[in-house]
Length: 540
Image (tube, rainbow, N blue to C red; front, top):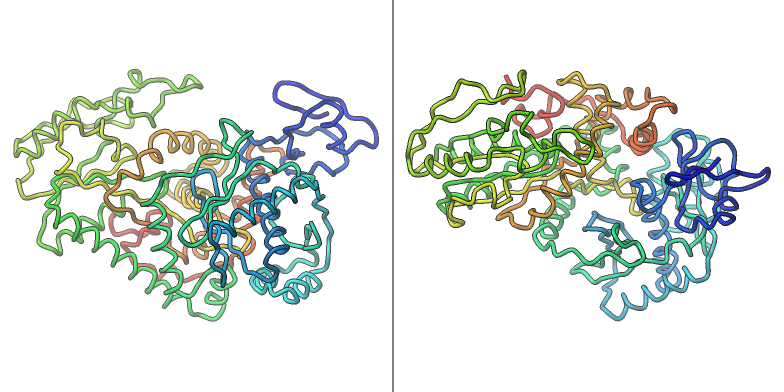
């Protein structure tokens, strides 16, 4: 039985999932999910399956993965032997760099045209299982030493390799049936490569527009310069440091780079004479620890900031607007008492004493107890929260008195050149570790909430990120080597009958390539990572 949206379709003996889809005109199905595991359409149709389309998170990942393979095939036709690296997400696309080659606009157009030809040829993605030694030998023979190094860290007897247009590659995930399934895309030039544009989620029949995110791109560029300083690009580089006892010094250098960036931000705030510092970022980006560290950096420069919490401005739960599921929407701006925030911030910055509210999270209501706040005219006010970059939150404050900061964990470490680690997955691992250790939240509960959290980010955080005066990448290149042991066993314990098994399995699959480290004692007590593993000096 194949479930597609709200319909079900019977299967016949000997069917593949592709046969079922073709017979019923289901042209947008990219793969299926059987028992919590994605399967390609070439698989025999047995049991009960859920269709995966571009509307599904897993479907979009399958599309991207397959399209990246088409890109590799096109580059192999036009520029054989060229090293290609899939970098960060960029809107609805992927930043791609081509090493040792400078691609101009005409070369990128030729590459796009070749990809279109490959899609029109409907070349199959065939799957073969080979021994570990043979896989490593193959990738070494074609110059993909990064992939050979990656596979050498897994003690698996065999690996599944995909083949298309005469080249083989390893991806940790399923592919579409053939290249015709990923014909919607575009390439757009970027300063150091191009962006591979995926279909628009709202209109999957056409490529998504290029994101106008210049500041985010600058942050990626800065983070890539850190990668070069640290000498780590892929998981195998990090694993070698762990194995060779070099991770401790690596942690010190990585943390020093973060210190340097926070100090730069503090200097900019002082130069601007900003009175209100607004810090925003998605879940598990380390906003609270960053706010504390920024306050210390400002103190070093002789400035005494005051920290305020937006949490105290929550409305009583019965007054919070409901989301599409009929539950209180705690992510929306209207969950806060915005008029009171604007009024009191204006008073505070003018030197008045105000009675600030206190929110009681036990009763889910505003407490009758208030606390008085007065701020000197030379003291900046620091506020962190998801709506910090939304001007509606601070309409009463002139723009020249504000300094906006966007913080997010934008991981630059790849598994190998072709298998990137998504920043959303890295943030989820942070959140899983923290929720399990300090909030008593089982892994499955956090996975269940993550979809809602991500929707809130798409609505209330990402649209405003380019308004930031400065951005900081809170990702620590070494962090997965530390975080793995905090959450790996719990993820492995999620069984196939659980609703979020596919999510848990996806995280387990890439964490399998990361070697755990016991170097926690090297991590400073004020590190952003301490917010997720414990031991932070700010939470005593």
